[in-house]
Image (tube, rainbow, N blue to C red; front, top):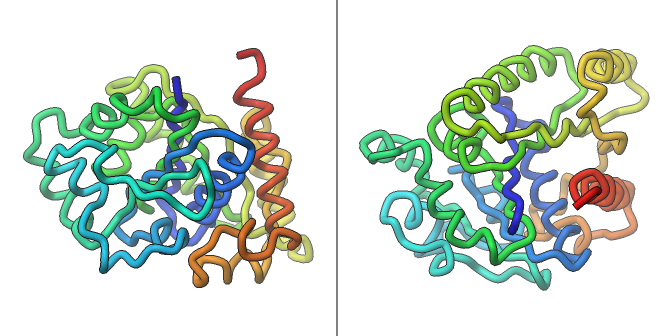
Length: 257
């Protein structure tokens, strides 16, 4: 039975999509069967895997609003074992349309439950907000990975997100866990980055991943080529960091299974 993991942070620009896409790629390369669900109307995970949103006729929107099956809307990627349920422009209206659906918080969960046995991991790239799409992702997930940038407002956003996860646990999904917090876009030369990292470690040491993702030019340019970092530049610092993070994730998640 596959694990469903949401990558969430209501703050944009923290490396959330980059982390989701690259971990999905490395998980597939490790021999796991992976589905990446692009639940962000911006569709960055979709373009980051080489697809043009404007040309897509089918997407996660068809699953959420038109109740089509996940299997009928997925795309194969360049990496064997990695499948994408893409986003296109239609998803922008889905949040409003979901409001009128019965059981609106669990529409995604119900759809993914039907394919959960097909995959080892289903990774969901959430929008940078705490709206109904993100609530759907959290209601259907076994756990959450929180990418967080080492900057001043990070702690405030993290507290809000933890509170939202707690509310979801109380009302919608009692089993959801925080699988980990990932420090991203880290600049070791910055005193502020070091101070914030120390602060995060102080309060969240139990769930903080040891691997830190550095600021890396090759990592930031890979999405414009429509490739995860392992296909763009597998030897750069960013690639090595995501490879190590995926190994740490697998060790933590599959230990004792």
